[in-house]
Image 1 (spheres, rainbow, N blue to C red):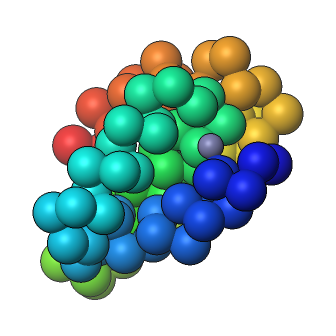
Image 2 (image 1 turned 180 degrees about the vertical axis):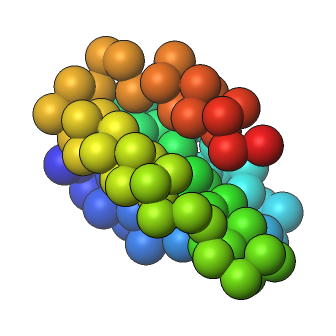
Amino acid sequence: MSRECAELYELLDAYVDGELSAGECERLKSHLVQCPSCLSEYERDALLKALVRRSCQCEQAPSTLRAQILTRISTFATDGQSLRATTVTTVTDVE
Ligand SMILES: [Zn+2]
């Protein structure tokens, strides 16, 4: 992980929560488009947050759905290539 990656990694969580300043957002976004490993981290974070929000809204996600999603997330971790496409699919399923 480069030094820039390490710095931006610290910002990811706040970014997903929409808590970054405009300048920090721009910096992070311009890094994400050129750094697949940070993009993977970001997408996984965003997916998890979406899940958390969803389970707050309707008590609990069905446990089978949650298990499916967790399985897919752990698959992403070992298969960065398919992360983006699979994340989109999962989010669509959840909606
Ligand atoms: Zn990076």
